[in-house]
Image (cartoon, rainbow, N blue to C red; front, top):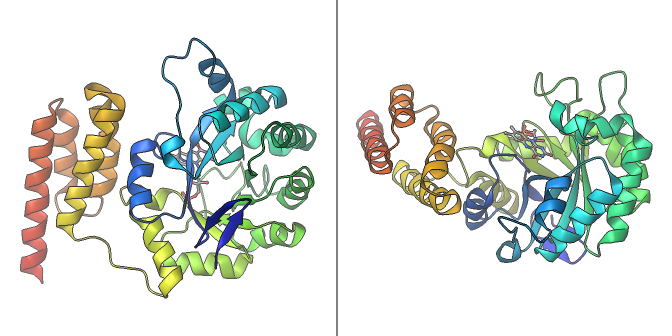
Length: 330
Ligand SMILES: Cc1cc2nc3c(=O)[nH]c(=O)nc-3n(C[C@H](O)[C@H](O)[C@H](O)COP(=O)(O)O)c2cc1C
């Protein structure tokens, strides 16, 4: 059960979803180490990339060490998207993914994201421009449609494939649903039937069982995992392991989870500097602590401190307490 995207070969069809503010380089580093077969960057606004890619760039983008990386672009101007794709290729992107699913109003104002599902002509023009601008695989991520009365994913996917898109990911919700209700994996089958390239099912996949079920009912060739990986950078790799061997490995021990979280914080510090690194690490800590004894109190204390050492000491005590608690409960 593999996935081929041009020259890129993944031995299992499991992809870490693009998540703005989450799947940055530190998170991807951990997810890859735990065996995620394919990873997507956060979305990059094509205009920003075009500007930053020029001579005055403050912080250069560089994906060379992350090969193969899917770099996602969002925007509504075909030429700007094509330029941003070229800049991404120069920076080491292995695949360009075009975002047609983001529901954010700010993104829609610039003509990008899910609003493209309402303007198929523009959507197709973007795919055409990007495919002609680069010589790496181009993929598209979309929703089922704008709302339940406009379920055009199958038709739009077909048009994108005709323009050269070589994989389609479908989040099984409409734009109007945002994240409410359940992802409709059945509805993704219409897209699978409409195109002759791999389709990836996305939405509410949290473990091996849901991954297998989503593929079965949709007919999709693979799955993309988003929110369930927050606080669990090992999850995408573990689901891939599960598909490979028939059984999902158990999560790391609490001791290991603590070490992973510490490493994540260190990576965030070196990526963003002390202040932003500390602030950014808070949401990852909150996700990591979910469901554990005393999580709410620990979260409050961690969020209140600006001191890295104190933050680490709070986490150390919290994890030690939870380890003792789980040992005495066993
Ligand atoms: C915090 C957050 C940020 C996201 N950012 C992006 C993004 O940059 N590009 C994108 O295509 N989708 C983005 N998404 C949507 C996810 O990629 C995914 O389609 C969605 O969360 C459904 O999958 P899940 O149920 O596995 O989370 C984001 C979702 C979340 C929760």
